[in-house]
Length: 112
Image (cartoon, rainbow, N blue to C red):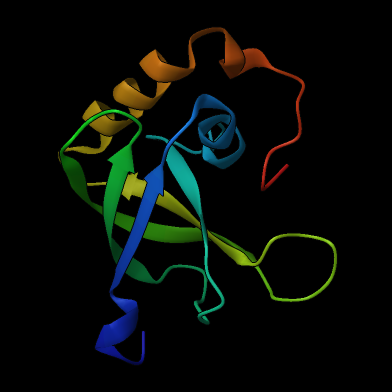
């Protein structure tokens, strides 16, 4: 990473449809797609402030960029952040609890 302003990213998801579109279940320890036009590279380390639906607390979690959608084209610009650190499994479980049956949905996501 080249500047500190890229080190912290924020994402608040307010409904199950948006959560299903953002969640990256195929990533070890889970991850989410964060819409952004900032430039990131694969492997960049980020600190994610993650808000999940009706939970008043935001989850602070470390992450690593594992997916990049560049601006332009037909896909939403942003990065896929793999959860890392000791809170990774807690955040993954919280997301999967909220998603329930949507985990196996055929609906398109922001990454697949």
